Figure 1: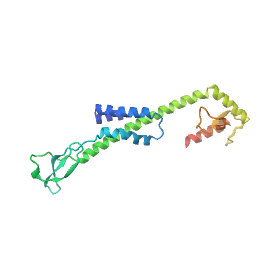
Figure 2: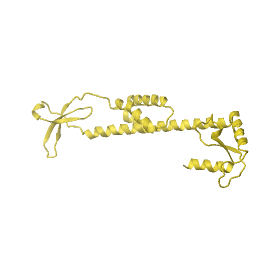
Figure 3: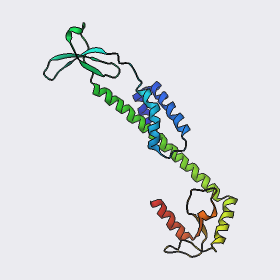
Figure 4: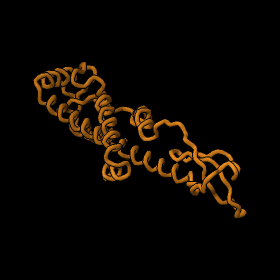
Length: 210
């Protein structure tokens, strides 16, 4: 839905350009750890595209003051920035009405907001994909000969006795618990401890509830 909204807001050509930048950015930063920091870096590439630098080409416009008097000033048709008032005598034609600068700011804000939402959605999808890939690899690892040999060594080291001793402990260890996942897939056995099924369930639940 966000992609459709963005395409309507920006137009097809600008949307494809923005999408290309985000695609390349995400490909380069495939491991996402600080999404908000990445968003700041990404915006340095996006901002010049949606707000390209330009030289203001001021043209005369007219507006009505609060007292009903018609006054004149110069306004840039691109950014809608204005100068101070100018004399009517310096305008040799009937200029158009001044455009409200707040409308330009509002339009710019809407574009930026939708682009940021689109980027965050892509990052979320990337994190979900990365998480799924990690669990797939982890489950495959638990079925490997390497893990089975390591698991046996830890259980023998601890004499098949549960090292957690939480409430409801079954005493005899039948499982092996990671103290940390910092070295997972090549962990030293001091990162592992023998544990009973009951304590393992309790510790896993505590970790996931944090």
